[in-house]
Image (tube, rainbow over all chains, first blue to last red):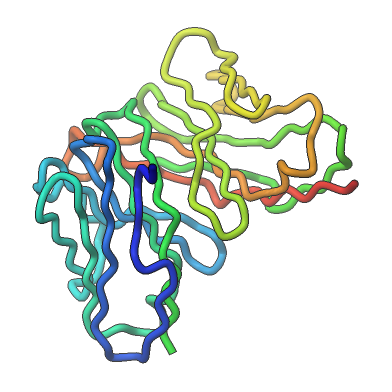
Length: 114
Length: 117
């Protein structure tokens, strides 16, 4: 069984479009995250939700809007896509979101903006 | 400021040789340290983690890492590398988010490991 899943795996779109990436975890965790991995493989956190409440927002443009309908899901909606948004986006989850929690990552969504 | 440095961008070793990947961190409080591996086209898999206690931690796939507070280091080692170990390796420190109280991972830039047969 897949612990953290993301859809789609690949997403190719034009500049200016709006797109969404979905994430689901079946681990029963309370906290979910979105990370962005750029072309140089550098990983940086974008958002974190705990029990559907936004906890971390790391100076991400307003065009990015996470939505958590329930504890098991954290979706990422991106408006007015730009070339610089091309990256791999990883979803992750952890039990409670504490310092020592292990984060479990999904397989990633490769977004290409043309 | 919190940061993680992996000095080696790319390392090549021969199969069967030993491996050490370097990681240095900067964090004001007690660090919680992690090593993740990313195989090509895959997500990140946790290799091992250090929270407290024994400074030598064992992980999956025969990896181990040693926490050295005096050197602010958490280097990853493996005594004998297999061809399947070729991947990208990321060191990370767990830190509180801007809102306080919750975890975020600060990653190093990664080290790409190539294994020669």
